Amino acid sequence: MFRATIQITLRPSILDPQGKAVAHAVASLGVAGVKDVRMGKHVEVTFDGLSEEQARGATEEICKKLLANPVMEDFRFNVERVA
Amino acid sequence: MFRATIQITLRPSILDPQGKAVAHAVASLGVAGVKDVRMGKHVEVTFDGLSEEQARGATEEICKKLLANPVMEDFRFNVERVA
Image (cartoon, rainbow over the protein chains, first blue to last red):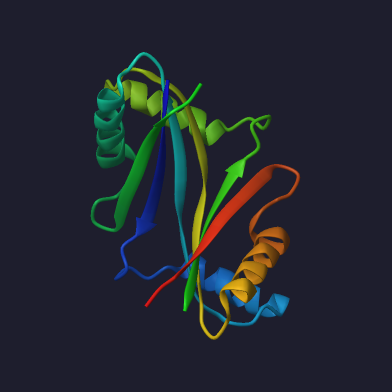
């Protein structure tokens, strides 16, 4: 089996109000030194019965068609074998 | 400056209805071989004026006090220098 670990992040030019809210909350906690916070999605997809290459292709397709908004978001992933 | 890249994931024993919904949507797309999908959060925190060790300590504190629910979620992070 293979597991794809996917990070979906807002493009740098897109404002991130959720990240700004977290940055304010961090300041309220009294943690200093935080310059910026950006929020994104983390997705783990487990494949069964596919080769590593097929799992990579399927992950790319899932990201493009379903998980990421290509106008606002970037995605990157890596695929590794799991027991 | 240092940037912490944080992954927050549901503990394996916790049901993930959002992941199940994505798995169904993937099947509807016609992508075969997906056994499981788990959703989580991806957070990038940029620190300014802190040492690497201070950035690690601040990240740990932010995760424990603010970002992760310790009953249901695990977190892991790495800190790297950015320009």
